[in-house]
Length: 344
View (tube, rainbow, N blue to C red):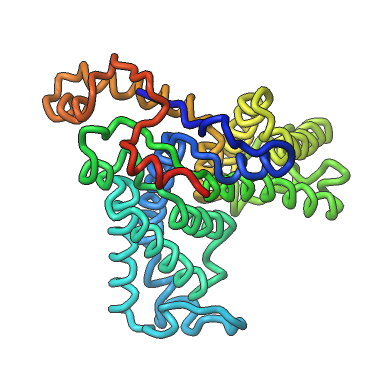
């Protein structure tokens, strides 16, 4: 399967302008974007399942906040249609949009709908949601701007079934926005933490582990009250988050930095109830997967499906050329699609 997405060398810009153009607009395989769309769809479906238990309590007129807080320029469909029927209908639309994103059906429309509905829920009751919800809707916006259905999707199946397992090259600017979002998230997190006293003196983690309302289990006193353990955990968290903000852009350091970030978030998730924040951040980590790596993973998945005992899975793997076949041309698309993929 071709993974090379480089434009011809002739006429390529050099210097800062060339770097800027390549960073934002040089076509790259959409294998990474396909993985981002699928992981985002999984997280959004999970969000829908979890919020469904408290839907009426959080967002209806008979719930904990009968009227939305007055905020300038804060729009919400639930302000225009405040009834319970509208609430349930809007939630059903979100569930359908999440499933469509997961499988890549009418992908751009599904991403737009998901973004609008998530904003409507957030603006209806800002007190019920957290940073994970904000990040979730921002990722939805970026997917709406991206060609998220270009590969490994129902849209791709309907448009070019014979090239279902190829990853056409597209300009990555929307994916870059998602990557920058993750970097800026950690940068400002560290900056805000250092402005406080407990993070500067190394006691912040100790305090958080002793808040019984958010801890998943009773932390042993010798850990929660240990100055050494608190210092190591607090400054270690700041070091990892700083590395995620800065060194995640270095391809050599990236695997180690992301591994540290995953370990950090899993440890926080195991000890403290932080909702879907960690899972949503992991979607951003997927956005940093190199296209050639994402392609290799998906090719491995296809080979597994090819050997599956299920006839349907084998039929899915058979969509397109033999998985052992490696075309020599640098583009997956026919000339007409290839021309549209190259900016300028």
